[in-house]
Image (cartoon, rainbow, N blue to C red; front, side, top):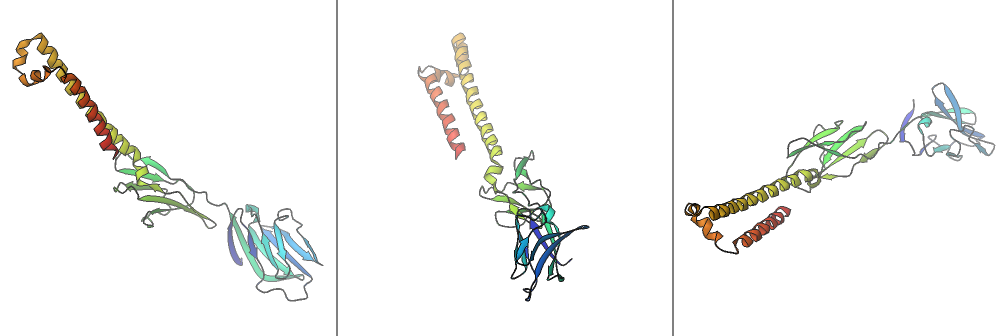
Length: 258
C-alpha cells in the first residue's frame, strides 16, 4: 500500500518521489487508483501540463523539477492509491490517501439529574470523545464516553471541555463553567428561600390582624395576650410593621444576591 496519508475534506496534500527525477526527463504522470478504476490525475509531457480527469481539474499542480504533486480542496472521492511514472517508467513510490470528513466543533449539553449537586454533561457525536477538566486532566475512563457525571465542588471557576477527534481532525468545545452548570439550581434554591421568608412574614402579619379584630370584639381576649394588645394600642404600630416587613424582604434579596 505504500505510505499512508490521512487528510480532512477541504485540506490539501502533497507527495512526490524520494529524489528528484534525474535528467533527461521526458514525462511525469501521476495516476489515481480507486478500486478497479485507474485515471491520470496530472501529467507533464513535452513541456505541457494537463489534468485530463475532471476530478482533479483546477485543484492539482505538478512541480516538474521535483516531481511533487499537490491536490487542494480535497474531497472524499480523492481517496485511493497514487503512483508516479517518470519517463514512462513506474516508480516504487506509492501513496495511499484517505480523505475523511472533519469532526465538527462540539457543543456540551447540560442534563439535570434530579440531584441538586449532580449534573450530566453530554457530547453526542459519532467520534472519539475526550473529556477534560480545568486542570487539564483527562477524566478517568471518559474516552469514547459521550456523557459524564459532574458533582458540584463549590468552585465556580472550574470548567469542563469536550474534544472530538478522528484520524484527520481534532476540535474542542467551549468550556462550561461550574457557575453555569449549577446556575438554575442555585437560583431555584434562592427563590425557595425568599418565598419561605415572605410567607413567614405574611403569617405573622395575619396573626396580629386577627388578634386586633378579636380584641375589638371581645375585651376579655385582651387578658390572655396583654403584650400583643399593648403594641396594638400604638397608632403607628401597623405602619411600622409594614415598613419592617418591606425592609426584611429587601435585606433577604441583598443577602441572597451576594
